[in-house]
Structures are given as structure tokens and as C-alpha cells.
Length: 365
Figure 1 (tube, helix red, strand yellow):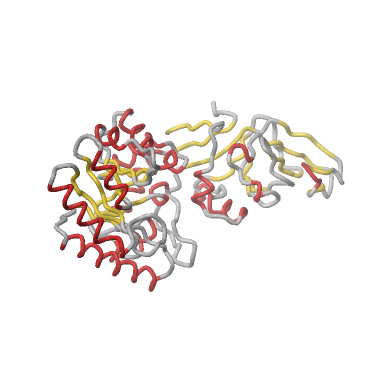
Figure 2 (cartoon, rainbow, N blue to C red):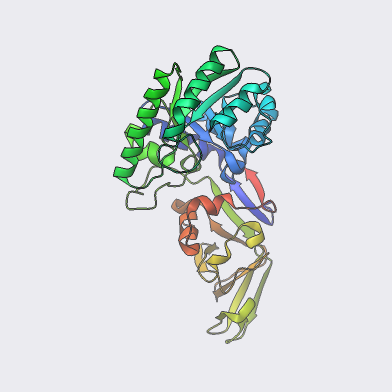
């Protein structure tokens, strides 16, 4: 029996998506990113499905996320790349977690920790976030070469991240990244893994693939594009979000619905109560616009999304307590998609799936 609030995760879809992406990227290896609890899909389960689909490595943001994978028995290469001042690099090294290094001071801390740390040097090729700037690269590369010669680190990787700011801007980033890589090699470094393209760059910018691509949202079956290029990529959304209807009652015409009475029934109607709200990750910005499928028919949320629930005016459509409302899933099955919800909330599909909260039961199939 389905849970009151349930995210059904199709692990086979994740595996198949990775297989599809591998065919698309023309021989580049694939790292699947399972940060933020696998984009809301469950980090450990998604990681195993990704590896089953042919991924050769996993990516996370924090060391703690990597240690969760290790505790679950996953021994594939794992890279963690965003660290605070108290990051435990010794624990990462002991667990065989590869460390993304973003600047010289961080490199010195990694080199001073116990063991020989396996690192990927990150440069800022134009996104303007973390990573060494062009002005700081010479010092970083020289220090990395020195520490590698002393056995304190091993520079296994070299990477950056595209801004996805348009064809010419991305091409300029590829060129800048390549120049930085050339500088690193000239400093005596020989990284075996070079990666720049994430989902969007990997799929539509062959020059950004190098030997490895980092795939996030595409592995979960969602398009990384928000423009006219978001054609069918042959991917299957892995998450279906639903909740049981807990109340279905007839009301008279002119009945106000939810806070503020932003919605008023036009005629006698049935109101279905769906027990999932913004505490569970349903965006309040989708009030009055979020799509829902109930018993094979599509409706729109009536009025405001509350913390724990929302209401759907289903008119005279037969709906009973115990039926399920499907918020989003695979549109090929006739239900709304995460992209539909993103449009309703003026956001992106990444946020829709990633924000699904802890009260929602994940069921893995």
C-alpha cells in the first residue's frame, strides 16, 4: 500500500538514463552526481543504480555525503568538492574519498592532513564561483606539484564548471579551461581525469566532454535545458510524487477555498484535500497553478498551497477518500511533469525534485 505522501523512485530508469547518456557522449566516462540526497531521489540507491548503468564515478558536494556512500558499502570513486573551514580532510582520505581543491590555502590544509590525499584541482573558467582564478593558478599548480613530489597528495583530476550562458560564452570557457590545463601540465602535473561538462554541457557541447562528464539532473530523467534545445533526450523521469486524498466533500457554489479565499467555487462542486504542502517541498509559488492528476484527469490546485496540504476542485468528477493525487511523474504516462511544476512555480525542474522533504516516503522500485 502506498504511503500517505510518497515519492516513487524508479531505479531502473536511472540506470537506463545513464546508459543513454553514455551513448550520447561518444566514449567519455560518466560521473553521476548524487549530492543533495541524489537530487531528492535517495543518494545511496541512486548511486547504486547509476553504477549499474555504467557510471564510473560519483560526485557529491560535501565530504559527509561521500562518507554516507562509503558507509553503505559503495566503493566506487567519489569526489567531494565544496568544503568549509572545518572540513575533515583526513577522514576523507582514510575513506578513499577524492577531494576537490579550490584554492591554495585549502591545498595546504589538505596536504597537511594525514595520508596521501587524492585531489582534483578546480579552476574558475568563467562561472565566477569557487575554483582558482587565472591569476592564482601559477601558485596553486606549483604548490600542488611540490606536494605531489613529496607524497602528500596525488593530483588525479582537473576540473571546472560551465556557466551555460550561451554557445559563445561556453566556448570561451572551454578555451580558458584548456589553457589552464596546459599551464598545469607545464607546472609538472599530469591529471588522469579531466572534466568540465555537466548535464547541459555534456549533452550539447562536445568540446566540453574531455575524458569525463559529470551528470546530475539528466541521470534522473530531467532535461537540463531551459530553452528551445530541450528536445526529447530519450530520458525517463525517475520520480513520481503522489499523495492520498484524505477528504472529498461537496460544497455549494460560492464557497471559498484555502487561506485568503483566492479561489471561490463557480458552482456546486467536490473539493479533494491532498495532504502534502510546502513543508514537504511543494512550492507555495504554485498556488492556483500547480497541476495534479486524479483518477486519470488533470486538475489545477485551487487556492493557496498550505504547509501540509492543498485543495483541488474536481467538480463532478468521481473522487473518493483513498484515491491518489499524482503531482508529477513521467509525462509519457499522462501525468504532469516536474517541468510542468517548474513552470507553475517560475523555477526549474532541479528545484522541484530536490526540495522534496523528509516527511515524504521514498519507495524504490
